[in-house]
Image 1: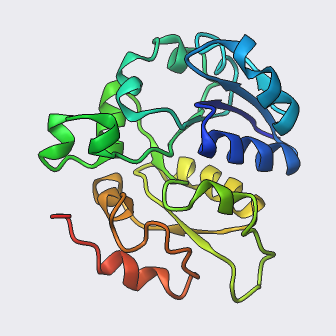
Image 2: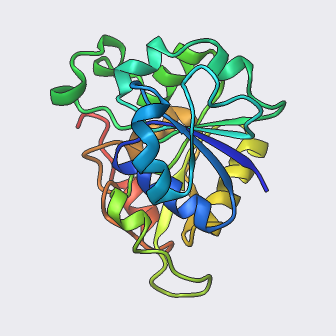
Length: 213
């Protein structure tokens, strides 16, 4: 089973930690304030607390669920200590009122391409279209007609397959929504965001996306 590191202990980080541990993954979590502030978090979720500098050491998957501007300040060890062939997942949304002005994103660069540029590695966009509370409450078995589909975007087919497996194990249907350059269709304010669509409904929502939003 994959070792997963999560940076960010907010609602999304907490929800993912809880469900990933429940489904058998080994999970480490870090935040900007240090592992001593994550004792209660660890007790609730079952994840292990770590510092940002060493949270991803040997991890097969790194999930970013921290405030977007802080991605640029992450230490290089976050990437350099990952296991060979590890996958980086961007679960962030850009919210100007919270995150301030990021000129490249404002100019039209998809959020995940900006994240990829900051880290110097390819990333997979996932888990940003669903509310945190629903990650722990809306899972359904395969074959259920009401199973929620979660879009994932990326340029590496092997990495996409790894993320797809995680999404499916968490009780959702992974839907390949295309290359990272098209991941703006998954961003905050687009039709798929917060919609909890089924696999039949999601193609139309992605088609209806408007890059000018």
